[in-house]
Image 1 (cartoon, helix red, strand yellow):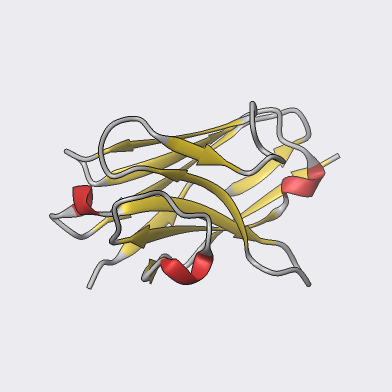
Image 2 (image 1 turned 60 degrees about the vertical axis):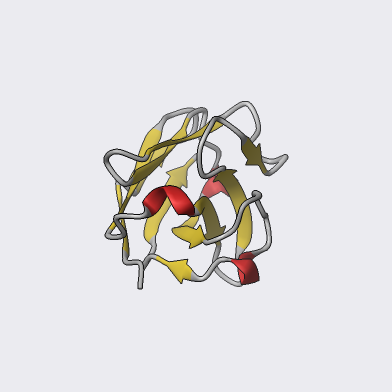
Length: 124
């Protein structure tokens, strides 16, 4: 069982930045693809970014490319999401997720473990 705990959410102004962090309890953290998803009020959960188990392979939703950066530290069992040039449409609850698989996936159903979420609000 992998436990994921997000932190770093909050309020930002449009054009500002926030950094989300996710700490994992699993000592075999490097065996998991890690992803960030978000869910805005009244909308379905959507993919934001994902990072491969090892190496530097990443994937991003088109809506955040060039603004968000996902990174991970397998020694510290953490994955981060640096969010720059925030827009009001980025407002959502952000979730960290883990998938025990080889390749990156953008499909929420393929992630076995989820954090409790951290809210991000971007004001215009």
